[in-house]
Image: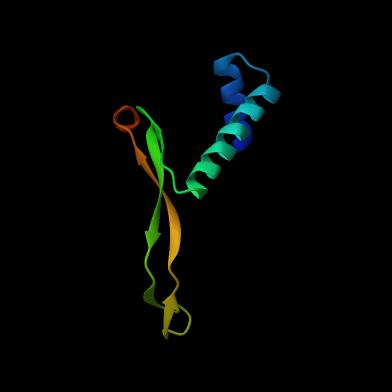
Length: 90
């Protein structure tokens, strides 16, 4: 499902116009991004939680040459599904 299909589905399920559904989805994404940038956790009970984790620098291999290379440390976004979402997918 891409963003346009998600907007259509939200509009239909919530009885909104596509424009309103797009505004709501964009607001959710922007607010979640802002919270994660600050280092906060975003939890939606039953659905899951988004958090930021730090990945340490490590040594890897260049797949073309096989030579060792350093992979820099960085922050990564993690998503942990909630029990209701996990059970629904099973």
